[in-house]
Length: 350
Image (cartoon, rainbow, N blue to C red; front, side, top):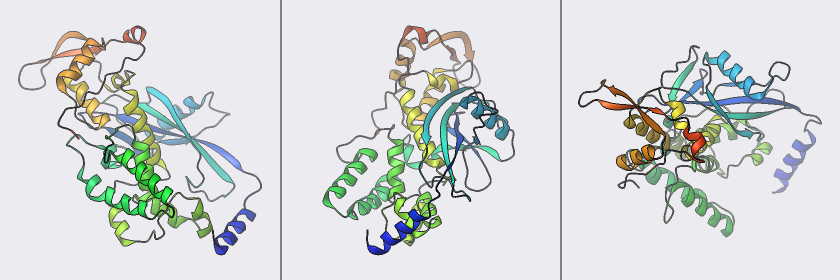
């Protein structure tokens, strides 16, 4: 830190408020998967936001009830399955006119069936891969990764001031993006997004960088010295839709959590209608994991694991031989410790 930076840093520290007003916000990643398309509920007219609200201890008996009330009021949707994700409290994560306010947000994951429809005019379903396009490998490894992201990340790694920092950056890149000897891990969604943010490869990096006075930029985890580089401006147009505040980071956190959870808990059935075909379960699992699955192995895991039972009914909505309809066996929750669906990937994938 040179003298100019130190002077600015000290001036900022001297101007810090002596007391903080901490508020507790609530954000929900609401997911639905109709027809094999993973969707997330968004609100707002500008950069899309996740449904949000503020916890009011005088009105809400529990934090979760506050979340449910807020989402219902904002979108007209009543939530079913809900679980708490993480607490997000980084400084500068949300703009505020009052520097004395620090917003701490508790993120939740909520799952809804395929027919859920928001009623509010500014709430809508959005394809979650429009926000995280490098995560969808159902048609093979996206060219975006090897043609654009990895070369840019390599340039970023080379900007490290010390050899150890360079080695650490390269290791993070290879582990996160399945490069070199490392395989692609669908659950590492958050580490991938954070790398892209730090390297200035997503729009939020530039927005956050430009919105802060120079002394405060030192607190932002961005290593690019020139955030006005026109080449980077072209890159960010290809790295997905930006979200307001840090909501794309919350979305990445939830996708990684959900991908891990479907392997050992039957949460996938919270997204299904009461009766469904085995193919429909597979398409939902593929939409969530972002990879194609081996049909026979997937079905064997679902059936032999006791996750479903036949209803005796048939699906006649498609041409050809009617497919058997199944229901979720809720009693499996008492029979097995980890009754997940399993994700046996198709062999031709990378």
